[in-house]
Image 1 (cartoon, helix red, strand yellow):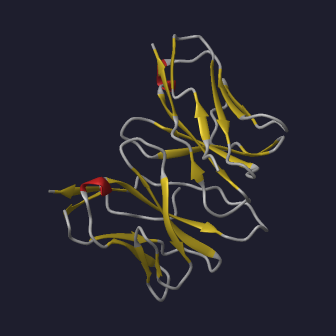
Image 2 (cartoon, chains in turn yellow, red):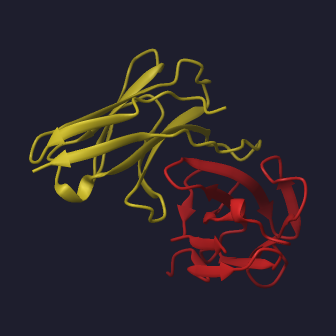
Image 3 (cartoon, rainbow over the protein chains, first blue to last red):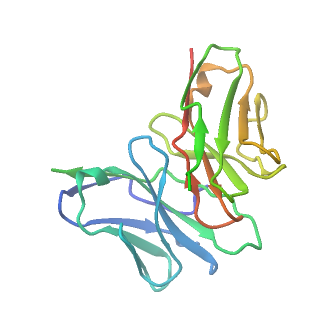
Length: 113
Length: 113
């Protein structure tokens, strides 16, 4: 019952930008978009999150459409170490209520030498 | 600040035995989540706990599985009378509040012979 949909897999050439899309058409006004990745069965790792403005950190950029129904995670210069499963989830960020955090199957990104 | 610590990292049990998986959240975190991941599958939510309280156990199998997060000490996921289908990676995550970023451990890999 994940609230997001992502492509199952993608390839990206090493050194090029990897653009990973996510659809979250039923997102609520107080829900943030979070991205995590899981490298070869390690524990998932937080990447970035945002509400409506584009966000950038040392790992990636997050572009959220104006209607907030979809977003794109951008890895500007993909390396072989970026090969992983990338999960997009939506989550509230206020302490008033509880929301189960559900992960879908994610996108398996393969960076090719 | 140490991350989320899970132990054991690997556990082998014979059918019918008990498995106990431990999770020590990050310092200052009082919210713990457990997820199960079968080979080549995504993360499946199991249970969400706060100190001394189970908040959401909707993902827990009805029998043989239990979880606790006592006032002192780590969170424990207990599986009684294990079967081969319980073989999986079990991940724990913690957060400082009900919402927000989840910090994951490296997982405990259970193998049932």
